View 1 (tube, one colour):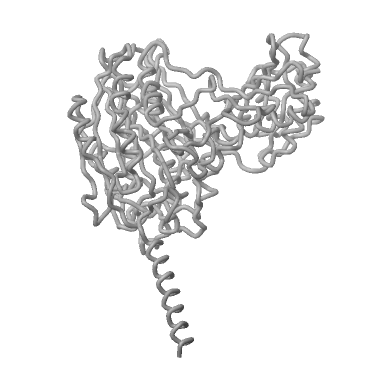
View 2 (view 1 turned 135 degrees about the vertical axis):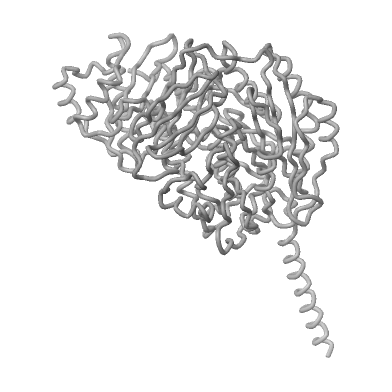
Length: 622
């Protein structure tokens, strides 16, 4: 009897422990990387329909003005296609996981468990690393729960005035041969993004009408043509004396967001002071859309844009982190309010910083989705910088990166004390320098940096980081050839990642011998070309056209091996060799280094798809 009682007690304790663990699993994530499995919510039985855009706005994913779309778009009346989630949940975001690789998407360090207090920021510019971003979307399409936004084909219009200065807020409308497809405003640097892959695959030619200061200009877009088109206006741009600058924070305010909210409270004056002290004296307004989830104190709360910093700070000080139950939050309602309930300026700069550690609920059957939001943001010229923090899962990262890339902004991820680029540890022989080795270690720093960058486009001295480059130094404990192989492998990887078009595996490519600036560097030009050729041969994306075949073509063109520095000549050689891509390089000699400028060229159009700069210790040469 006694043993039986003991057995019953043991069983009861086991049941209590199991039930306790189950309760913990369903609790709101209190650790930054907890409850990731909760993100695997069942897909809705049918995708939510897309709400037709308001009059005057771009048609998002097909509405009354839409044409027949590609296969992914044909059910536009039923809304964006929901991608099923059928893969394991990642404990770290893809951006953070790739960050440690020197030749990856050039981010920060991996999001390991916090080693120190304090937020630190790194970022991914998915419009610069466009081919990498397309590969990212394809790689995680089944694993991440999301809506499809077909961006595989991207054409960038660059609007300039008669003095070659960037033109912001130019109105752009793109048509096919039947009707209007999309419309929007150019951003501060004059860019407007058009994605042919969103429309009927049979279309090959488009017409864009650019309106600025009551004058119109028309250009034609070839779907297979250059990925970047310059639009030169015959007049001088208009820049307000005090440029209107709207900054909207869309903030997840559920229980796990306390540190991020506190950080913004403590630094909003610093942000304002840094921006207000600029020589352009922008007219700054701050606003917020706060959001939680259904069943919480509120779903969304809108704080209108105001130029009164004390008033905004008073509203911000009242924000607290509380609520939430499952991992996803109602991000889509917040985005809708950010578009429809905010009185954005018409002739200045419009920026949104979206901060969250959770993915979006896509199972509420909402008619207005984040797909509608990015289409409307483009039509209004709003950049949406997205900031993922804490335990954001791969679904959350996927959606945030879709939002930022489509609106020509950047995806920012916050870590907790990890070291940034080139910090600590043994110095490597090959390192990557992202423009003057610029680093940001705080949320407010990166907000200030990117906002200043936008404002600088309207000045006569645009803000620059300096050249980005890879550097190789000689080390006693490493063979010269090994160092150079690491360098050129990373250089090839970045050329591929930063290509402005998607590069399919097996793409035929050829390397043109590097051309020396001076005869004294001829032998090293040949030596570095051989090292580059070896690295290309190991690359899994390109199918390399043999150099012996290429040399015959060069001889026929009477170009020999002295180097082709003219892009058109290189493209002509590429066509004769049957290559789709050509890699060229020119070598210069400085006091301490050899410097090589690499280009990836598209043979069909002769356009430059990506560029790269290498600095090589002179000890690594011949």
